Image (cartoon, rainbow over all chains, first blue to last red; front, side, top):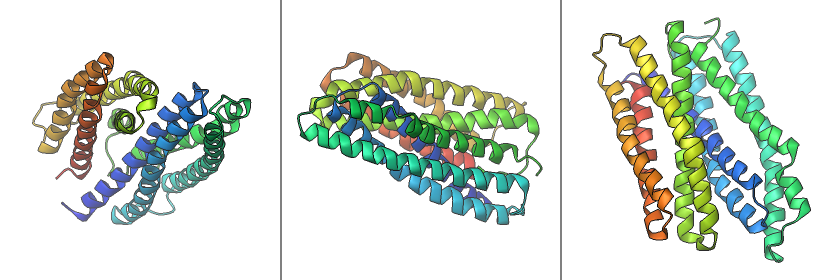
Length: 157
Length: 142
């Protein structure tokens, strides 16, 4: 295989880990929305950590090999679709990072409540359903889908 | 995600194919993770089984359909007269053999017996690996 093909394999692997990790986290997040017991929330948020690792590795692979591919395929780093994709990619990571930190606090609260008797709590319910956290996480996912669309259509290329 | 320029008419089916495949990868991963977690969190078996079942019905099946229909769509545009290269064959092999595996997983999830459920993460884990082989083959096009 050529250098271009190898770079594409690693770049696409990154995209699968990133978008697949997002789907993984979203599925478990949706499941958590319907739970009341703190220990259930602890378990589901704990499984989401698998997605966090996949998203981290995927972000690195997609970004590094994506930039390398721009050079290898003789696109320009100033091309509109490349710049737009980079901006959306960075924004998606920023939103996901902020949402993730808020979810970490929710998981900490759930762990404490689980250790103190595992009784449902209004505070935990409010945190799990927090519209800002949900908007940050799902907004991040939507931006990544937009990046995928830009990569495929390459408007202006 | 980057690829050389292709005809515009291929973009929508390719987008749907890749999007469906990534969501399929992620949701099959959830079924796998929930299945393995049943082994270590027996006190949460009912919750984890429900998560696996719902993810299977609302995530895995729709994502598989989007991925597979879009694959056929773009195959018809790119190779209208047949004669697909080997890397396309790998993709179809993984997706079509995957139907059999996913049907078995669906039956096991419907049965809900603990011993039977233990087979679910093994089967879905194998499918995750097969999806990896497919995306490497289809992106590298060796």
